[in-house]
Length: 51
Image (cartoon, rainbow, N blue to C red; front, side, top):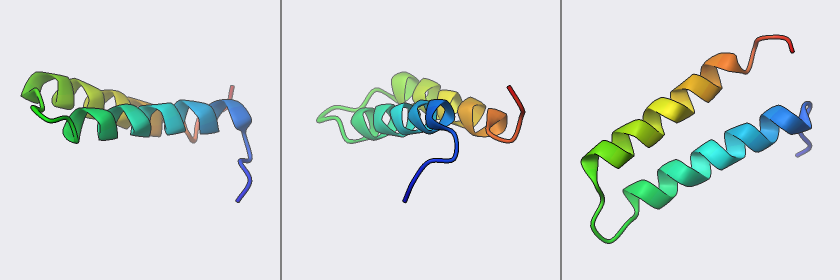
């Protein structure tokens, strides 16, 4: 698999990694998980927009 847009690929990958780190934590913090998920949603919402 190859990214069509390297910059957006990196943003998406980083956002997913952050969510996974937060929800898989030994003691997940609800507020941090929510913030991380909201950030991921914001990134997803920008994927179809042109630069």
